[in-house]
Length: 227
Image 1 (tube, rainbow, N blue to C red):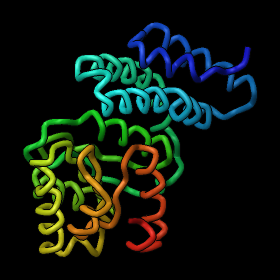
Image 2 (tube, rainbow, N blue to C red; image 1 turned 90 degrees about the vertical axis):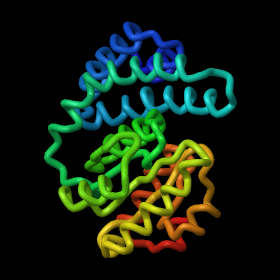
Image 3 (cartoon, rainbow, N blue to C red; image 1 turned 180 degrees about the vertical axis):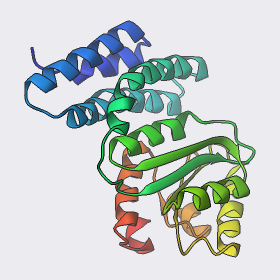
């Protein structure tokens, strides 16, 4: 029986936990029988099933075809599936591609988007420290110092909280931390023009582009290439 990641993605969209969890278990077994390592199997399921499903949810939310209750139900399904994959992903002895501190800026209580980004970065080899919503500049800086982060993700889901991205970058600059960590910004109202205006190192419109941006930044291709 071939692997069908669409079963997982569709189950996430339909908020069907049992179907999604059963499909993840089945796919892990099938991929293992095909000779794929446990780690590579988990990554394939994460990207092909879980993230694909949440990308659909994100797009439906942006289009206002679904609302927060539906998003939360799908997120619960995603978390149930991640409970199966997380031990595999975290057991890897591979060195991380980079160390990321990610959170939603102070005054913004939304965290769904950055949770999806966190999962996708982890699935692509990054060590991720998610400090959650309503995070002050000091909280970001303290965590960066603690874990020696070289990437920071600042999420803002409201136009009223976008200025806090600028304030956080300013705080990093004044503390001398911009020499140690590159700053990525994102969120529904955020644009590449805004990122450039506030001197961020890069902007990503969604989770998939965040991974690409993070890879560019850790390879030190520079601000011009990242924006």
